[in-house]
Length: 334
Image (cartoon, rainbow, N blue to C red; front, side):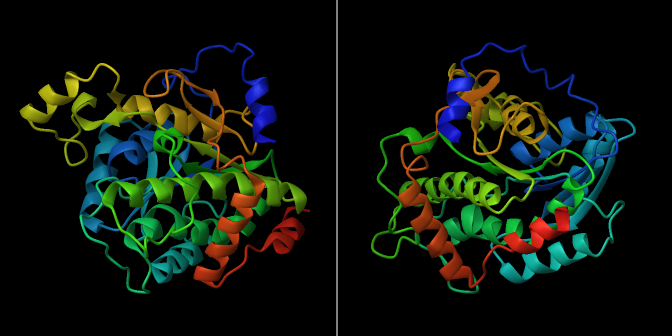
């Protein structure tokens, strides 16, 4: 499905303008890791188009700062916050229960942007409270749990309108000739960069495999993978409490012509989330790979391999002890 989508992507389209999104009034989106970086700017773009946005993160103070900044920069924005640590399954389940229970402004969910993650990985291998490798748990495994917890809610919303959507945060690192994701918890060998790439290989595989399983179960929820290219803070507008790079970082980042701002990088994530022409199982990112307008792209080698995807999915099921409720979601959408 993803490869067919890539072929369709060669057809020219009108440029995507983050400042002129489709009208998203009446829609509600959850963004994980929304207190900074890509998550914040994606939330800002969604709110600017009229959507109600739930900003989630693990720090109350940073969430409050992002909430205040977004309201100041987007007059009339409809936003609220949700505490959630995506490396902690208990925190994920509690947050998902709040959403399912209708404690927020609207008991509906049109989409979720699975954005939270660790980019600057620890030098030494660290474990979460439940014994999972920290980078893998934060970037991939936690979102596997969250998407499962919210699947029925997304399906119920889809029963009242077109497909709802989940978007997984990929990375250009998955195209750098890296090996098949086997030691996904870095138990045999830990290297900071390798741990990051492995986690993103898993994310890419999960995102495409999720869509294949959703289609097979007749669940009207799309799963899409998107990456932001090489988006860095020193090229990004200053936002108090959200993005405040120093003078040296500004200078260093501006000397990298192949980079772009995190605001620009967020455009690929938002397009994957809200563009009605995007299809499940597709992969989106900047036109020039590291920067540029968002376009449909070819998935990484391992994400395109069904056997790899199935093995990764089975391992995530084993590690979390949970299976996605496909049948229940299909019934909820009827």
